[in-house]
Amino acid sequence: MTATAALTSTSSPELAARQHWIGVLSRTLRADLLAHEAALRDAEYQLIRPPEIGMTLVRGRMGGSGAPFNVGEMSVTRCVVRLADGRTGYSYLAGRDKAHAELAALADAHLQGAQQAHWIREVIEPLAQAQAVRRSRQQAETAATKVDFFTLVRGEN
Amino acid sequence: MYVAVKGGEQAIDNAHRLLAKKRRGDTSVAELGVEQIRQQLPLAVARVMTEGSLYDAELAALAIKQAAGDLVEAIFLLRAYRTTLPRFSASLPIDTSAMHINRRLSATFKDVPGGQLLGPTFDYTHRLLDFTLLAEGEYPGPQTQPDGRVEACPRVSGLLAKEGLIKEETDSGAPVADITREPLEYPASRAERLQALARGDEGFLLALGYSTQRGYGRNHPFAGEIRVGEVEVWIEPQELGFPIAIGVIEVTECEMVNQFVGSATELPQFTRGYGLAFGHAERKAMGMALVDRSLRAAEYAEEIVSPAQQEEFVLAHCDNVEAAGFVSHLKLPHYVDFQAELELIRKLRKPSKEQAR
Image (cartoon, rainbow over all chains, first blue to last red; front, top):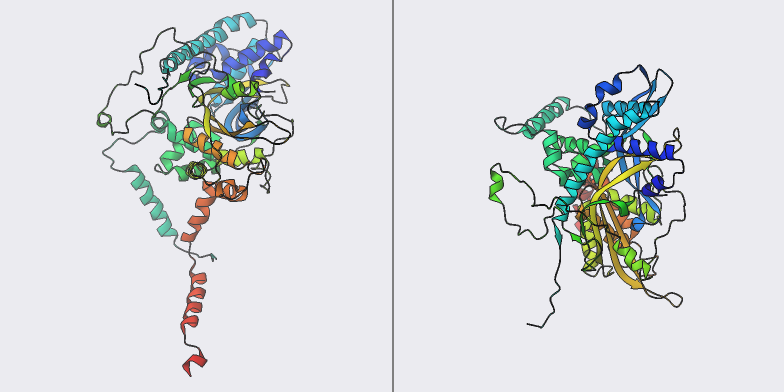
């Protein structure tokens, strides 16, 4: 299973929705998530696993599609929180930003509750929107460097 | 042989203070910030992350600052830090076909689906010093079309594979060997070789790759495809039981298309060499792909006659932390050892009794 297959192979829509918001939170810039800090922290919660820094061993595939091999590690921060009603939220985030990991875990916990629609509208959608804007700006820049090479025939005028 | 010595603490302390002073330079010039290095020297950061074997741009930039710009020293620092962190898990293999592409080119097909995208590149620059960089400037980037989009870029090797013209890559599902946990033994698997090459010194791999082009283990490479861009990393944490994305990393991938092989039972097919590196690291990915292919000599029953084809020679010497360490140890006191050699050579030079007579 490759990374992309992981998303498409999941069966339940609930799980796919959770994978989606976890993905959005993982791609979010710290500053964008910090804008929601007050709302996310406005609940009683416990740190089941305080933010902890470690690594994930990144794997690639030979020829992009063959057998896996190890490329190197990447730094990762993980965190688990529990809200007063017992819901737990998890986060695993690239990098070493403990505050970011705690907020992402809180968001994951809130998003599993009765107010899910509210959190998706208030947090996930704006974050996803910001990511889409960044992505399309980047794409437009790359597209501006697209070339057409002309092959010259040797020995002709 | 190195024999332990004592003393010199004061001199060592002072030497380190002197180094810190030298690294700081003229204090009338603003001190370099780690974030400036990260933002403005991204290619140095990419090399340190790749060979330091830890994707963390901030720490790589810190290492570059601490090492006063000595990238091999910075790689050593990052490798050392890496050993202090726990490993949570291994990722699912990254899917470079789904890459958000910042640069993509193929030297084998002019009209490749998705097109040739130059991205930010030194290629086609004139390599003339740009004196305008001596002053502060503004660099607004290219003129873009607001609706400019990157089209889907299917793998170039996939186009060849569809026609059966290139060796298929297959995944048997076997466990992935890890040379950071189990020491390398020869002959090594291709997975072990690629892991070693991914950590290997760019200059060493570049030179070995170059040697294959010049005839030392010739295998006629073409740059089938080079792509640079962002891929998502996914893991499957045990406590969740389903895979999740943990973030995006920039990688450079190079697929070399090489000389074909055939046999009595198989039609001729192109062969492959593969390179993958963290960040924008094209020269590294190309060197790696050339050496990956040359090290597959035994697999294709090619005569092993050149350094780039000799697995043990390449893998045992490609790591610059190991190489620099062993060469550097020559600077440590070897006084006792050398005294013995000195005495021996004096003895050898004394005329023997027979000759004296």
